[in-house]
Length: 210
Image 1 (cartoon, rainbow, N blue to C red):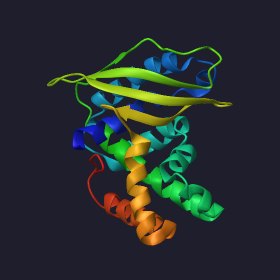
Image 2 (cartoon, one colour):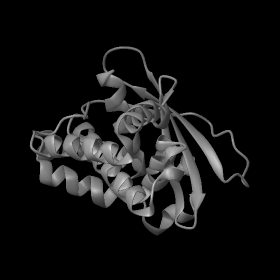
Image 3 (cartoon, helix red, strand yellow):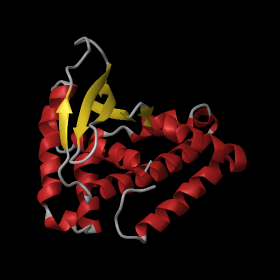
Image 4 (tube, one colour):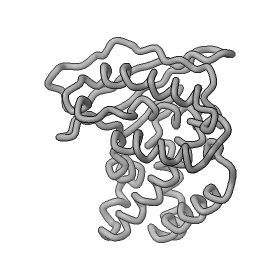
């Protein structure tokens, strides 16, 4: 399970540093162009490899966050409960979920060693507003890992809103956890649980969030 979560995190590295060009590039071309650059940066940056939290977090916030639709991802993970939340609760939940994923991404960045990504042909129509980009992560030891992305087209370009590793979608993985916590202690209880988890992660050395 730890490997799966690390790969969920590693998947988002493909969405770094795109700039204005990202708004016009096809989703698979965008991912292919920038993923190799970001992974190589993580491999060769001694401070990132050493787990320098400030450096890694800054990289995540500046390069990765602009290409992930956290609001949509949070709404999907919360399911029907999202519509029951007040606008303030929705914002708080999205912020805490984003912070949790930032820690996850940062932890994965600091652990990248010799992984490479292979891209599969895109099966989509040019008019599609949502697509799935299929890739494969080749690791030093073990079998290749299936790693797919769901992206939606926006005015700012293509943005990720879900990731699939070994047949499991990230949103679905969190959906059950969110529902269980909300049923037990309400939306405010889920927000509090995520906030406490983020506080603990902030006080520890970087590693992939569990």
